[in-house]
Image (tube, rainbow, N blue to C red; front, side, top):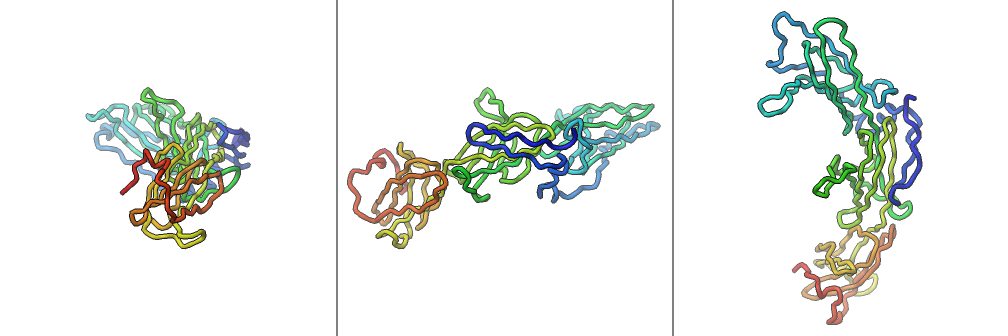
Length: 329
């Protein structure tokens, strides 16, 4: 059936929810997003390298190409990038690019012979070997991308929104390589951005801030479907202030170190207000000002953004977590 089916609501690894896709065709849903609508349409480029010019007396033939998200979908009208390669590698071992086109359906003039045709839609793509006959009918070539789309977002706690500027996603292949790493598919994906991918399973990493608020989940991309996936962070934004009395003005030129309950330093900065996003847990804030050190333990709870005041008062010689920590001078 043509178009997007409703995505099934489910939970992935306890941190992801899948929302229903839009109730329109896959093509229309993919065009809903600004990054596709704002893509400038390029004129078709039917330029061939001189080494692949047709021999005398051999006429080039028109080859029509179109692509679909799935075999049952209508041909796509925009957002495609076409590339035609020679099957014979050059001196560098690469296949020479003979022609390219951007937009929807494409048409190239190719001399009889074999070619590799690649079509890409975002991060989704497929390559097909095409043979152009010297005589007879030249069939239209239809490439099926077997692709879908995913839109990523995240919340803190159960449903607290997170500012877009604080969020970033990375998409990896689901398989773990021999070196223990996953292949990176796409980095620094912003919230509410459509990502077109070949159907399959992917590993998504969401970073809230830039310290230790990280969650992971596997998602399933289905051909012809657009899925909205929301990951759940257990983190909050914390602002540290060194004050002479509760509710007082923050003291400038303060060097900050934040340690975990295990004594590991997770963040260091120098400012009157030190703002950061931390994963849920217990921490120790250490402030250094004019060769004096002050500290306070505090807890971070999901979605509870708060200020943490460290009072300027004499500290016990026993520094606890500071025993094994090396603070910035």
